[in-house]
Each structure stands twice: as structure tokens, then as C-alpha cells.
Length: 362
Ligand SMILES: Nc1nc2c(ncn2[C@@H]2O[C@H](COP(=O)(O)OP(=O)(O)OP(=O)(O)O)[C@@H](O)[C@H]2O)c(=O)[nH]1
Image 1: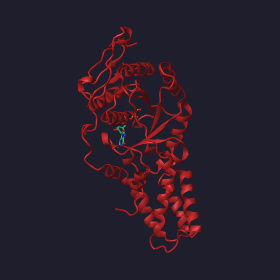
Image 2: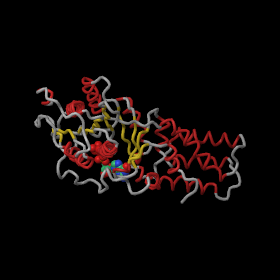
Image 3: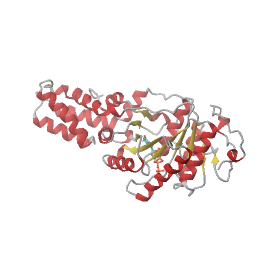
Image 4: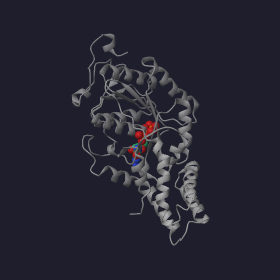
């Protein structure tokens, strides 16, 4: 229990953009530490401060990030239609194979192929050169239902709990979200709930320092549910709008570790039955179709309300976003296209299709 509750002291009401606000607040240091340590930025990618806008245009960053995937899809289609006069069965077969190779997965591929084949059958599509436009439209139809932005709300304290397998990019995504929401004027607090990996606490504190957002942490090996509970209590007392809770990476197949996540939910619900208001799964795009299994199992265990797909810049498997969108009725909140703070983009289906699947290469 935090000592400002015990002592019935008035907690700081609201966070401001003043860095002084990020100094340790009133609490029992033995139990909870809200600390942005001085040297915690070690090991973080060099980048601009959160207040500094990205130097490149937002779409340009997304496009650059998706260049490997775009190259595979766009050039692939160009190769298939080169010299072709009509869309025949062979071309359609090759196209299906290309979409599967680009990691769109069976269900999304089949839906896109059905849309294209139907257009060919109705004679609305006969020119092979027009295939790309038809594919883009079909992809957009799959992605559009998954676009739903979430933002903290003034006057409420909501918890966004981040889950995922080891190394998916949870801590990094939390840092980027903290900078974004802080920049939008929300009071943000971070909970170092990954008590398993010692460096994770330091890493989170580094992001906290960069974003000028306080971090609630306990010693390594502490009970994750207790850290997140205390952090939620602190966030409510401070009037922060959002608590972003890190959790340890775990394989979706490790039943006992999935139970731990359920415990965090139960413990938070003691403070507010609606908490955690959001549970977001972080998926590494490079894991390809395995991302679907992860998403299904995390969803079954804890009930996801959002998905963030990271590392789209390092892979040609960008099509996995379509596979995830088709397989699960869960909003895709953000996509990560780099390690920098500005490389986390809100998921915008039209921008994503434009960046992933160019009308023409180049
Ligand atoms: N290129 C690229 N790298 C990323 C992206 N997101 C995260 N990373 C990198 O991925 C690595 C792992 O990220 P973390 O945030 O530590 O992953 P985690 O899920 O917290 O890991 P655990 O604590 O082991 O569960 C780091 O080197 C990040 O910089 C992204 O969108 N693009």
C-alpha cells in the first residue's frame, strides 16, 4: 500500500509536462519505486526526443518500413503479369502462391482470390495490368474492419496491459506509446511488470526517462501482479489518465505463465472491476503465421482488446497483418516500423495498403 493512502495525504493531482513531476512521488520506497534513473537510457536506440517530430513524413516512414514486403508483393505481381494479355487460370494460381509466400495466410489469400476471380468472371477485370488495383481493394476490405483507435480519456485512469512472447517488442512499444500519449497531454505512468527479465525494468525506466514519464518498479523477481496493482493505485491517486503495464514475455503454450496474466487481471479488478480496460498483444511480424497461434491463445487466455504488430521494417512478412486481421476480430491498434519513438504508427488501413502494395514499384 502506498503511504499517501495510509497517511491520508493528498496525492499530486495531475501530471504536467514539467519534468520535475517525474521525480519520485510520495510512496514507501521499500515497496514501490517510481523512478526515472539518471543513466537509464543506456542501450536504447538513439533518436529524437518525443517532443521533436519525426524528420520524415509519417507516410514516408511507413513506406520505408514496409519496403521489403512491398518489394516482394509489388514486384511479384509485376513479374507475373509481364507479357500477359489476359488473366487466365495459370496467372490466378501463381498469384495465389505469391500471396501465400508474402505471408497473407490461407484465409486472407482465399478471400482476396475469390474477390479477384469474381471480378474476372463478371468480366469487370480482364487486363492483367489492372490486377494490382483489384488486389489492393480486396486487401483494404480485409483490413478496414480492424481499424479502431483507442486513446486515453481525460478524467479517467485506464490500464493498458501489454502481453506477448519474449522479444516481441512489448517494452519498446510501451516506451513509444508513453511518448505519444504524454505528447498528447495525457498523464502517463508505466508499471515495470516484467519482473522476470532484470534488464526489462532498466529498459522501461530508460523509456520512462526519455518520455518524461514516471515508472513504478520493484526489485527483480517481485510479484508482477503486485507491481501492477501498486502502479494502478498510484496512477489513480496521481490522476494519471493511463497506466501502461509491461509484463514478462511468455510463450503462448506455457499454461502456468498464462495463468499469471489471469492473476494480474484478477488483482487489478479488485481496484476496479473494469480494469485492465485494455489488453494488447504485441506480435513480431517476423514470426509470420505463428503470430496467428499466439494471437488465438493469448485471446483465449485473457481476452485481447487490441493488437500491435512490430518489426514490420525488418521483414518481408508484412502480409501477416492481413492474416491477423482476417483470423481474429480484434482491432489492430498500432504497427511498428522501426526502433525509433516515432516508428509506431496508428494502424490506418488505407495508408498500410498504399505502403505495402504500391500501384507501381519505385
Ligand atoms: N526494427 C524494429 N525493432 C523493434 C521494433 N519494436 C521493437 N524492436 C526491437 O526488438 C527488440 C526486443 O524488443 P523489447 O521491447 O525488448 O521486447 P519485449 O517483448 O519487451 O521482450 P521480453 O522482455 O524479452 O519479453 C529490441 O531490440 C527493440 O528495439 C520495430 O518495430 N522495429
